[in-house]
Image 1 (cartoon, rainbow, N blue to C red):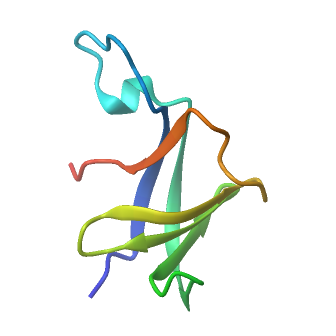
Image 2: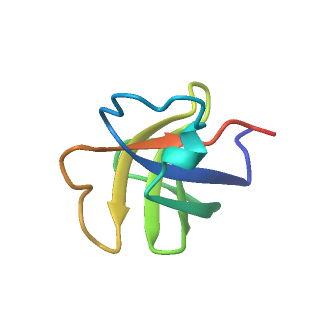
Length: 85
């Protein structure tokens, strides 16, 4: 069973020195997304919310496909799933 909601973080792919900052502190955007009940083109469950649509592998918690405000992610940015609290 996959989670009903996740937080997706959009972070720079090469953060040279984060110091003591967490991944969440380094994010340029974050969104709470909820399972849509659909399967995406990748074959993984689809999540959507706050302008983000993502296919997520629930086993590895990897974002397999992503649209932000209807567009692909800009180069230099990476989508991550926020750690569970």
